[in-house]
Image 1: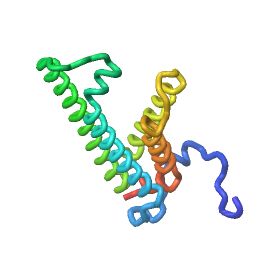
Image 2 (image 1 turned 120 degrees about the horizontal axis):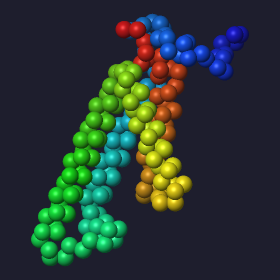
Image 3 (image 1 turned 60 degrees about the vertical axis):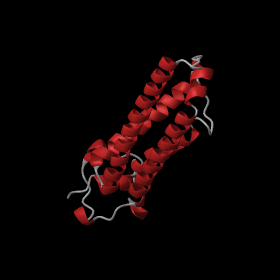
Image 4 (image 1 turned 180 degrees about the vertical axis):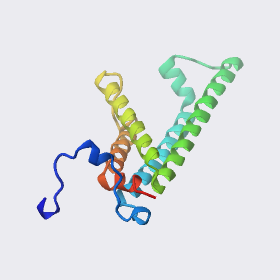
Amino acid sequence: MSGGKRRAYESPGDLARPLDRGSASMRRPAATAFGAVLVVLRVIAGVVWLIALALQWRHLLESDFGIVIDGDVTAQEVSDVGLAVILVGGGVVLAVELVFAVLVYRGSNWARITVMIVATISITWSAIDYFGGDAEITLRTTLITLALDILVLLALSSRNARAYARRRR
């Protein structure tokens, strides 16, 4: 190929073969660093979402689920336990996601692929909810996380990010 252009189609065998661009001394591409930063931003968005959920928990139970807790101690305790389970579970998921951000930044290929799979599932889930008519994509709901997932997918699926993650060490 002249002019340094890439072919429009690359064989799966070529894509599966690790590139030997300076092996372990290969510089971290901007796409990998940007992808890791986006995963961290996704974690921050998750923390904000959990805080908002905790602050609006009682209103959410009343408006969306029709559960009124006025003065009922048992219902309040069950509600508090339910909220605690959601917050702890969400915190664990966000902590794992933060570990994946560090692994992606360091060049782990399996972490990069796992993050891309999770982003794909999240994007697909949002699309199914939207086209099913059950959910709206707004700034208050899923727009920020959806945009971050799309950007993560684009950054980490780039040729340079793949080459960095698959380099010979």
